[in-house]
Image (cartoon, rainbow over all chains, first blue to last red; front, top):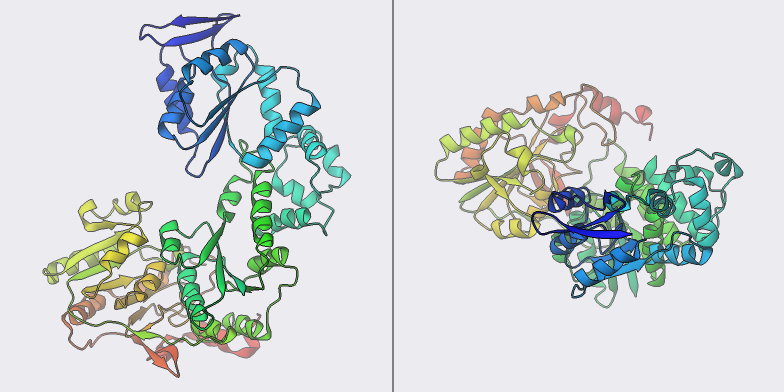
Length: 202
Length: 358
């Protein structure tokens, strides 16, 4: 259950089970600090994970009006609040996500990542109360763990093959260098592209 | 005919490559020319050559992000695959590598499995990496690709403005900033009528302001700099892209060659430029290896008193009496006078064929 409180400056702050989904006192300062972490000079699309009170999205749109902002949010009440807040905003899409995702969801997600290659912008204040779900989704998007990479490869099926040793390294945090070294296929274009990274990582 | 020229090195190389591409395009006016570059090349510089379609491989962006934890692992792969697919879709009749490097050849092989270096190109590469060779890069490329090119003469006229390019991207080719500051102060005292400015990109302005005041800097990009490179301007530059850029406008340049910079191979492709070259046995060293002394001591052999005296003669149009070398055309190629002064003990070892390990 989400409640919407109004702070002393008149800002609407969402609260879930006594947890604020953005800063209660200074949501604008929080938004500025959050945005300063990212380099968006080249970005055309961004994926904001967590809607919170929407102040970070507002600032993002203000500073980068040409960037297309995609917002992923689990809570339907927050989505409704954001839909109302941004109903006149161009280049903004809000996506409601279920906490239990099926393979069709991941297929769509990875296709979305492949086609838009958005900058990933987690807004962790907005995750409060649903951290495990957001963490799982964030981890799938980053593909930096063996399981999440396998999920990506099984869904999108690029022409890459990796030696078994990679998959046995369950605790391994993956880097592209791991993949270049573990890639066993050489003839296909996908493999050649991956191998090329080996050239400039030497 | 659709042709792709790959220029996957640095900005200075790109400016020289484009000179060759333009000369090639003159004799092949119906050809559709595309140029492949990396993300070091500024957009404003590419726009100045917009008669050729430019395709950017953001290699340094990939390199930066490959191991960034907040970037999806496959992003660099997806980005590069997209560029490769775009280039494959262009169906080029010919692919030419102007960078002459293994990495660019490997990339072009993905785009066009039939890509290969011609005998002329292989010869150019072998000769260019030979330390004993004294042929300018453009002169190598023009032979390899059968184009007509000769260095043009620098405009030598009245001097109203003197610009200085005091930094390079390569530590070994730099001179300490406080030394530059002392030269600027000397020149400001001695040549009061000259408008003296230190060129600075926006990215390096903060670093330069640790030594120079903001009013001493000319903060600009290439497009803005082009407006200042007129007939009344002279340039003093280390081995940088700026000196190659200045040749497009015929700006007379005093080149300062230290570290791995070669006085002919890396010179601006223009005759009438003066070259102060650091005298040390190990000069010129290899681009890829760090200076064994830590600090490039060869820079100390450049006398700023001599340089100041030279500038006085140069800007007033009188015949300079203190200069080690001047660039000139010889058999249609770029050469320098007095190059023999440059050969130290280690240089002689390098040029001894038995010591060549290339």
